[in-house]
Image (cartoon, rainbow, N blue to C red; front, top):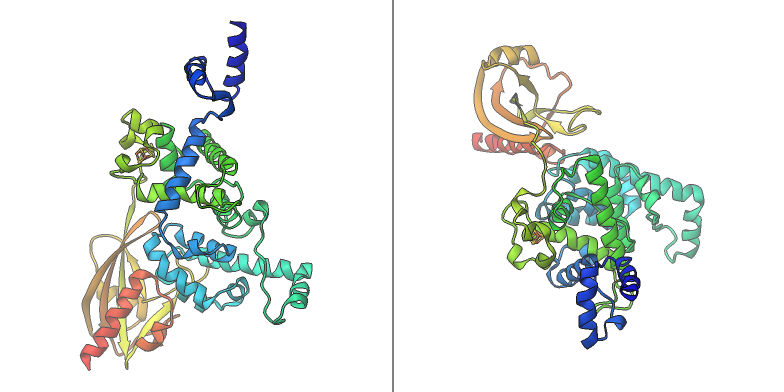
Length: 423
Ligand code: SF4
């Protein structure tokens, strides 16, 4: 008993029960157990995920680089946006603004135009602020002179993206998830990540029934993510890998990839899942219940009337001010409507000062911004007297170089077509 107790302590310190010890000790009589490392659930998970990712990872453009700037841009674009939507935006961005310095120097109109259609425009403004911060702190440290001295083309300065997690986290628009993603993917550091996909995978794998938004549960999930990426450091190179494999990078990406491709919100494909045997939700038939996200906040419906007003081949458009939703983007004049009745001539008069000669329906665009479900009813209108207020007259060609939000971009296309069909 004493000997068993000693061995039991030895094994329990490594996460094994007396039961597993007695079972393994039988095996050890036949195999050389003491010379082989027993595998815990976490190390099995990490191994299985790395093997699966090596074969199944999608070939995404930002996965062909380790440039932290390019990875950072992809991570910011991917917030709230699907991979297939992001690909052309990312390619265009990297073509137009290939360096941190280019992003720092770009004018606001260009930045917004490059982001046009991705939504959540605060992201792009923060991205530029962060790029400017990197350039400025590089300059104040004198890095520029150093880089210039060494560079074969002295006027080309490549500013260095910070590598320390705390420094990355301190940049505008970068939270714990994004800092962890950049540090792990670009620099292979064991920094955890926790986004919607990873939350879904972890709550199912570990059978976590509590709401992931609860503080304690959230902390537990971060801890699990940290343990797994920490395990990846210990993983020996897989077959065909070099001696310094990017395991932290691959492990974090494998969790996101599994959530995107296999462990999906609806109809997860447990039958082909590489970690099915280790999955608690699957074993207990609780997959559909997890993650427990609680009740969804109900979306609020809002209704707007927009006027597409043409004069001599030009349309009246205006730029949204700073500090509001969709700040700096362009739009057709519009007004929020409350109540069921839509008195268009009255609205027109109060907005533009003149009496409309003709108002005709152009179309309805439905879209969502944050928790608002928006219905935008658009009308073409004509009047001899229109006071443009803070608007300006632009031709369809000029409008093409302005950044509109998705709904108003549709109106801009419809407006341009209406002019062509009138000719
Ligand atoms: S077995 Fe099913 S629920 Fe579990 S991780 Fe895999 S896909 Fe998700």
